[in-house]
Image (cartoon, rainbow, N blue to C red; front, side, top):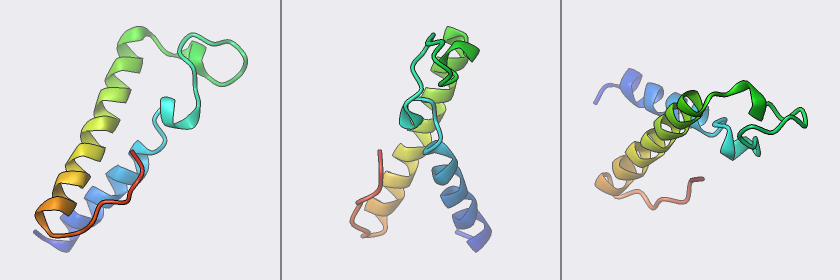
Length: 72
């Protein structure tokens, strides 16, 4: 693995922590949290992508003998 790939993986993980549910956004909510700006499709897509990134990071840590204590 190149350093640039590792750096990108960490960047993607950091970005995943900003997914709607991780930022306390509630789907369809109009309180100002932003939940009303999503369609069901865009919500599901963003949440699935964020979880995929987290799962990739967890797997990488496991495969490299690093104890996982990151956020999910």
